[in-house]
Structures are given as C-alpha cells and as structure tokens.
Image 1 (cartoon, rainbow, N blue to C red):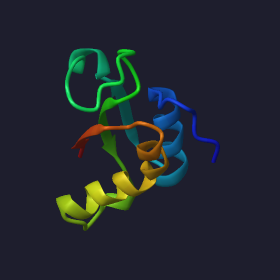
Image 2: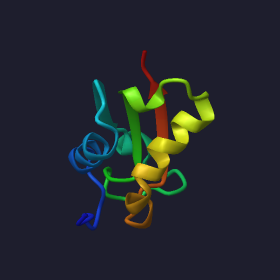
Image 3: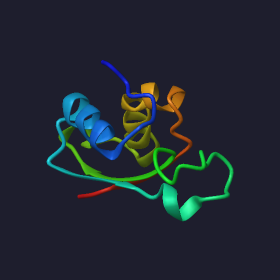
Image 4: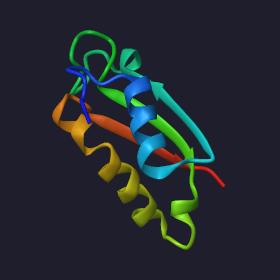
Length: 91
C-alpha cells in the first residue's frame, strides 16, 4: 500500500474497504476542529478522524477487538501523521 504523506479521509476509507470489507463506512476528517490541540499539524486536515463502520469481521468480537481491527488496518497512517481516531462501530 502506498500511504500518502498526509492522511486523507479517502485514503483511510480505501484502506478500510480493502482490509475489512465493510457493509457501512463513513470516514470524517475532523482535524480543523482540533486546531491548536496536541497532534494537530497546522494544516487543518490529516490528523484527527472519525470512522463509523459496520463489517462482518466484527461479528462475535468484543468492542476492544473490533477497535483493534480498525487500528491495525490503519497502522500505516499513524506513521504518516494520523494522531487521533474516534471509532464508532455500527450495527
């Protein structure tokens, strides 16, 4: 996978689609609302994201295990500047 220099919502969405085959997915870049906070890059994008996701891979797993699948899928983006990730598992 070719990770962009600064994470984008589209890149995170593509990665989650490839790795978890979600039935529902919304990725929102909330970085602008976190300007001046820890981890903000001063650009207003690429650091703070919200992911709303439903996927068959979550069946039978507890909340921590579900979140771990999302974090593991997005690990390459952490190295590229992803600072904060809010995860909402949908049913």
